[in-house]
Length: 132
Image 1 (cartoon, rainbow, N blue to C red):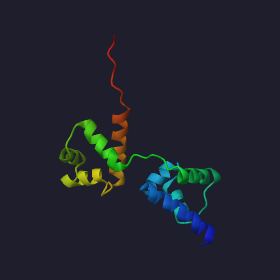
Image 2 (image 1 turned 180 degrees about the horizontal axis):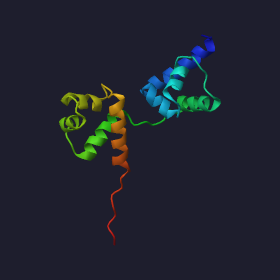
Image 3 (image 1 turned 90 degrees about the horizontal axis):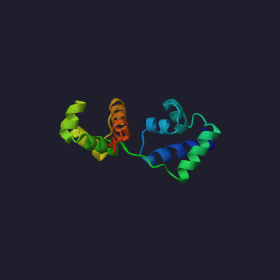
Image 4 (image 1 turned 30 degrees about the horizontal axis):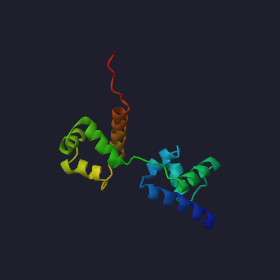
């Protein structure tokens, strides 16, 4: 692999590590397919200029990203459930939800999608205003 491609690949990997995101999450952030992100990170392909600009922008000013752990806490609190109740809802071991909330373990992609959808649904609902 060429030295320039190695340096570029390392920049993509470093950004992902700095943001503490999975490859799938980075692909979503850059609005590309997972394999495209992986090809960049492994130095197999070079991104288009718009993605290079995005890389430079995020390196200088990393985006504020809500973590999966934060999403888990918000969802549970909005539903007013205890951790063991969330574990039951997701059909996982009782301590698994706690690990997800602490960020010591990430859920599988299936659970990530469910949590993201719940988070979106729960945070976009606006309380109804009383008519005066």
